[in-house]
Structure formats: C-alpha cells, structure tokens
Amino acid sequence: MDEPLNVVLFSGTDDKLQAAAVLTAGAAALGRPVNLFLQYWALDAFRADRIDADHGLAPEAGAAGRAAVDGLRAAGQASWAETFRQAKELGAVDIEACSLSMDLLHLDQSDLDPLVDGVEGVTAFYLKAGEGQVVFI
Image (cartoon, rainbow, N blue to C red; front, top):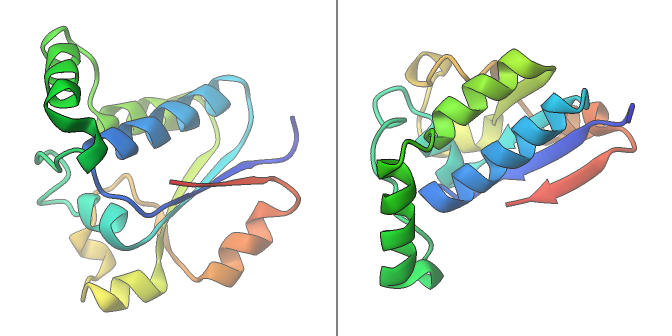
C-alpha cells in the first residue's frame, strides 16, 4: 500500500465531511498516506470560525437521515473534524486548501483551522497523488 489515497473534498455538508474523514482514518490506520485537497464548500467548512458549526446534510438525507445523524452524535460519535484529527495522529495525512478556492472565498491561511496544513494548486495535488487512487466527494 505504497500509493496514497487522494481525496478531493468539494462538499461541505456534515455527512460528506464525515464520510471523507472515515475514509481518511481507515487509510491512515492501514499505513496508507492520504492527501486531502479541499475545494469550495468543503474548504469553507474548515474555516477556524466554522469548523464546529452545523453544516447541514445532503438533501437526499431527508428527515430520516437527520434523525440518524443526530442519534449517532448523541451516542458519542466523533465529529468529522475530530475524526480528521485522529487520522492525523494515526498516520501520514496531509490536508491542503485549494489555492483557487482560497481566492474565490477571499481566505488567508490564517482563516483556516490548524487541521489544514497549507495551500496548494491542483498541479501540486496531482504530483503528490502519483499513481494513487483519487476519490471525489
């Protein structure tokens, strides 16, 4: 498992952020490096002043999905941000903000939570991805 798992995270809803966090933690636990590239609404969710906010769920979740997510949270499931923090403790997880999305959202790196390691362009992301799998969420 030398090739990294590369995740392009576009969505900023809590359910999709949680899915990305779980995939990342699983890969890190297996010793697989992970490169996470934050774009648009996912990047917005990683703002220091918004990371712990409710980012809603995808429309297809509906009321039943909301109830299920709320039930897991009440039972003590870690938030997506905490799951990413745990993944970084488990292994080589690099979280980078897309430079174009930073410009679009008028953000500086100081606006982002410390989970975000830096800012890079798409070319740098692809260079790090190598022959590894790319997942888009």
